[in-house]
Length: 63
Image 1: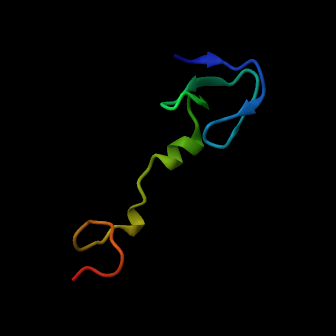
Image 2: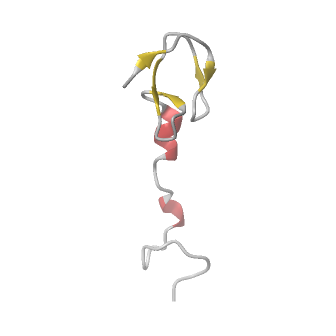
């Protein structure tokens, strides 16, 4: 369920919410923008740390 913000406040993902922004509650019941660029960036996995041999994340090298 989305709603229009009436007050200034923090978005759960770091951006500021301004009156008139379209918002919703996230899975932890925090207020967030419906289309939050910061949320989209945090939802993506970090593929740079995945081993290209075994496709796992681990410390050190794959043998």
